[in-house]
Length: 484
Image (cartoon, rainbow, N blue to C red; front, side, top):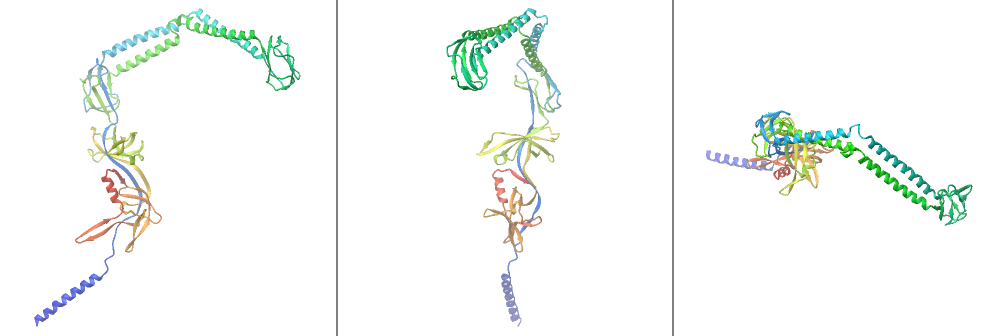
């Protein structure tokens, strides 16, 4: 009996287990759940990141001016901090001293010549000769103008409007004052003796004011005008000669020439004096001495080099981003060798010519760094971040929430056990966050960024959106990053 009971009990358990399995398999799967993120409102910033080398914004190097120069004293040593104007050392140059003495002597000679030319006791005879020449020029101008006016009057013109009655014919000799023609109540007379060379209007024809009626030829007057022009030219030549030659002061140079020589000699002395002053080496700006050599290797060998306290950094920006970079643009930088110190800076220069590496064009961008710490080293690396574009007060979603279908961009919003697609327009996209606009999307809603996927013994997330696109782009060499 116990054996039969045990057998029945076992059979019942097997049937119960099979029934439970069938019932369990027939139940619907649990609803799919999504990994979501909220829609927010805020700023999205697109930045370009690169690593550059920190160098001094300016350097000043002192060398020997020529082969005869040498170092007299050296007052600094490498690594020493100096202030603007601080004396770094003294050079000696006999060649410059000799040149300065010679230039001083030449200047003194030119100054003496100028003083002689400006002496008020200059020759009165020379002054009178110049004045006489000027008077002759003025008289010749008056005579020429008078004869030219008379010659012009030989062309008789109508002064009123109306028919003209002629008293003379072509080729006829006339005397001064002889009537030539009448026009209404106006009678035209010959201004001088001569012959009628041409008649330009028919007898009885109507003429308007300024119409040429006839012309009188006077060869003697025409010859006199030519003589007057020659006389004026000769008078002008005589005046020019008097201005140049009729003065004892002019023989050694005019006052203007002497003054010009003095100014040129003064400039020469000033230039050499500056070179002599430069033998005293002074720091042009605050900085650090990087080279101090009392025995330089020749004229081009550096004696002292000072690097400025202000620092700059250069980075390379690809052509895809260079359009968003401009001088005056701000940036931030950090120093791996100086952790915890965040620097600001401004773009000061962009190379006009691209450099190509493996077929990719990039431009060198130089920036001035601000707020430099008391950090005495140059050539250290720095991480630079340049703001390329920024959008404020926009709807923002994670990049992983974006989906593209048939050329349209959208996000998925959970709705019960499924999702609904909400179209969006991308304003600014970064590798982590996107600024979008959409009339159907609101702050606080949640959007799908990933879907849990179960596999035997594991649970992983299936990412959605365009995040993988950016990851791949970064591996291909892009260094553009996003920042909220």
